[in-house]
Length: 568
Ligand code: ATP
Ligand code: MG
Image (tube, protein in one colour):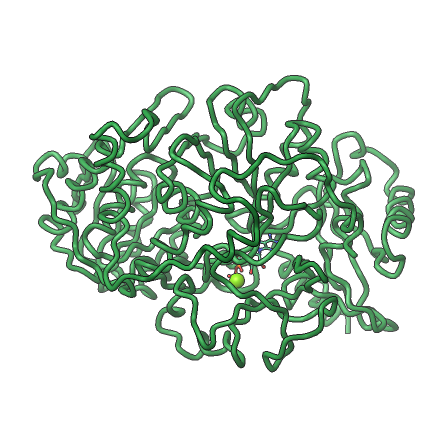
């Protein structure tokens, strides 16, 4: 299964800080859901208090750097600024509990303030990626009915160009050193209001945030979470998967518009009282990332598999990682080959996490448990994860099916509430006693889960079902392959065949392409079951990706199938 999948890492792993072993961790996690819950009051204010009483380490709550400046805020400072911003939202902008706030800022400290201020006021935060176009923004504002937008000088003109098409939009806040017509200046307004604010007593199930999904398979879906689903549910990520404590410095690189930023840049680390570290880079630069990891006391690092694929191309002799002890990834499958290379570079394993905008961590590899590269681990505490058929019936171990979470008799509190305004789409995700993730996978006899692919990405060739990930894993073991995307391509005999789009490593860019294609095909036949080998190969400079860096196989597949239609 999965190329090298069943080779097991036997190297010693760091002992977990927050639990003893996987089984007891799962058993012990069953938090009561209170009637009322508010992350700002129930978590952040508690850390603020502990800090005041000298009961927390001296690490900042937020440690932000770019290439020139540095900002360090304690929980007290975070509270001070966010209370002011909360007053701006209520008193100046006139926002009320339940009103929606659309936020598009890059990784600047104020992004974290808006997150906290919205929670304090009970307004519903809708983060958007900084890379959105005017069209995307118009769609998001119209679909969400947001009353307030917060952005900076760069995107304000885009906002203005669509504002008249968005009748719900009432107020606009600008993060800027200068003034702009019809916009309130956020920093200036914060200087005019009190730093005292009483946090709204939100009910646990009250809406807290709406995230748009990444749009890997289609148009992004508005996914609503409650104060408890993320604010409390992400304890699983922080305490167990990330294994954070208040002595940890945690760097998560995700874009501010992706649910992963709520997961790992806000809730999970702060639930544990850890320091959130941010390096604001104009663009992802591998050398800067590795330098940052060796220069700052970062203990825990999480980034996307696509980033790890780039990082492992760097020369390891240039870096020493002294504080780093726990590395993680989520969002896409991680290739076992990349895990080996990262181990060579840093001496550390990559712990994989599997989840969705709709959920908290569904499954993962946890410290102390044996890692099976190619598998994303076992069910996370709080979720009963099963592999089921189309009717929601559990399939035997070892058989492929839909990855699903049990929702009956008890619906986990850490599941999304709904796709906003789309009851039918929401209902379609539920089958029998389960929520279906839309992903295909299988469970082995030890309860480890193996990702096959998104339901739409699985290739059916001459009676075989082939997951793109298995072929991509085999390809990346060859030194010519930096990364690849494998999709189905129409074929008159087999119905579909496997086609690989490959980005070459620098050393192979000038090789004879015909020879290389044959060599790569032989290589795949050698390292995995031969029926999976890509009958077609195309070399490309870049692969189509989402803002969060996920490969959009759907785009490549569509092109292949459209070409066929136009040829007919
Ligand atoms: P959309 O739903 O709009 O098509 P998306 O599913 O990519 O986009 P997200 O919610 O950001 O949006 O991503 C969740 C999906 O990412 C999962 O359903 C799964 O397909 C994939 N994923 C996440 N983690 C992993 C992992 N460790 N291994 C394989 N796939 C993963
Ligand atoms: Mg999805």
